[in-house]
Each structure stands twice: as structure tokens, then as C-alpha cells.
Image (cartoon, rainbow, N blue to C red):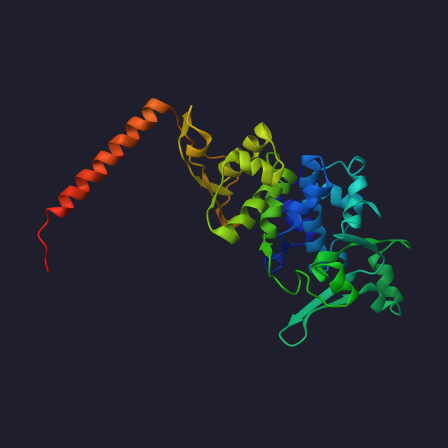
Amino acid sequence: MMTYTDMEQLLQFNDYESKIFMPNEIFSDLQKNIDNTSHIAFAYSYIYFITWLYRYAKYGMVNELIDQKFIKKVLGYNENYKKLDYLIKQNGILEQMGYIRTEKDFPIAYSYDEIDGLQFQYINDFKEFTAYIKALNVPKNYKIKFPVKAFYRDKESEEDYYEDGTFFYVDRTHLVPFEAFIFCMTNGDLGCTGFYLYAFLRCMNQIYGGYTIPLETLEEKTAIKGRTLDKYLDSLKKYNMIHCKVEDFVVGLGKGEKMPNTYFTNEPTNFTNIAKQYQKRKVMSVYTYYKQLEEKQKLAMQIEEQMSMLPNKN
């Protein structure tokens, strides 16, 4: 597995290339079309990565050929692993969903200003500069994956040539810094599933602030089940990608009475490479829970009574 520094160098990453916005509906769209949880996580990470590659015109910068094998390698898979190809191949699931498309033309440079906005320069714009094209060493039938949602949010927009995608409008999107992507892809405890779960929680944080949710509901929302969810929540916490307001687990308490945890996502500057200890929920009996609740209520009443006995300054 590559180190964080190795990945930065491979992708020629700099701090100006951090921001990528993703459509909020991607989570439900992937779950409707893909049954396997790890494949959902791979698909999210794949779409995120090819969106970043396009946005920052990496096809003209990275020293290696950016093909499907290269992308699999970055995402932590063997480059010859075939079981994911049904998702990413031409006319595969992600193309049928309208999230990616196979194209021959690709950006090799980009610019941005307040008047013209985001502009790309494409390989086809340089056809006359044969020496430059040769220097890029692009195979004759080379194709890339076009991130459709970055340009057009739906079919109607594309038919009308109305660029309302995530490169241009950030309504109903979530921002995931590219540093978080590199961190996950260079950490064996995280990978695509860790990145997918972090991105989901970050999306919910950007909508709601702290995200209070029972584990059972988090399973439904992410399609990550049971022990796998516990495992990746643990990894996100111990590497300080998220922190949690922990509520005690009460054995025997009714489902509607249990207090769920609240999750907060941290910025990449707060991540840690060394696994750290974090607060975990305590397990207690119903008897202990109600006894503590009764004591808290008594204390609150005592404080209220003492406050009422204070002289009124008015």
C-alpha cells in the first residue's frame, strides 16, 4: 500500500486541488442500483476520484496512464481485479445510472476566473501540435470516464445544454476534501468503505450539523450492516476522522427510549496517523439507568428550589 506522500506525488496533488463537491442523491442512487455494500463504497469512491481527475485536468499532469487499472490501484484494488468491472465498464451500471460516460476527449488543462468561470482545454484542441500529443504518450484508442453529474445534474439539463452540475452549482451537494480521500486510500483500516462512510456522515453534518442517528437507521441509510459498520465507525473514530457524542447503552430499554449517538466529522488537519483511544458508550441495566435518571431529576428540582429562594433583585 502506498504512503500518503507517495499518493500525493503520484497524483501531483497540491493544496489548491482539495475541493470536490458531490451530489447528495448519490447515496440513495447507488443503493437502489447496487446490492453489494463494498461495491457501493467502491462506486462512490470511483465517481469521486474520476470527478477530481477531470476537475483538475490530471490527464495532462500525472506521469502514469490514467486508465481503469490505474484507478483500481489508487482505490486499493489489484489492477487486474475483474469483479468490479460490471460497474465501471462501458454501458456498465454507473453509465446506465447516468453518473459516468466513456469519452475519447479529455481535459489537459483548466482555468478559472470570475467572468468566464471554469474552463477546460481538451486534448482535441491540440491536434495540430503533434509533438505535444506524442509527448503525452496517449494510446491511439485511449478513453476516459466523463463525470456526468459534474456537468449536468439530470437528463433534461444535458438535453438543454444547461450546465447545472457540481462543477458549477453546489446546491444539494456535499464537499469532501481530497485530503480525506488520500488519507483513506493509504490506510488499510479505511479504504473505500471508510471513505464512503466518512463522506456520508460529512454530507449529513453539512445538512444538519451534528448528526444524531441510531445505529439501526445508520445501517439503513448507508447499507453497511452490523459488525462491518461497527468496524468502520471504530476506524473513523480512532484516526480522528469523526468524533461522537456518546449516549450510554441501556440493556432492556425500549427501542423508542434509547438515546442515539451524535456524529461529527473532522477536517483533514485533525486526522491522526496513530490510532488513538476515544470515549465509548457504557453498558448499563435498566435499573441503573432509571436510578441515575431519578437522581438527575432530584438534583434538577433541588437547584430549581434553591434558585426560587434567591432574593429578587427587581
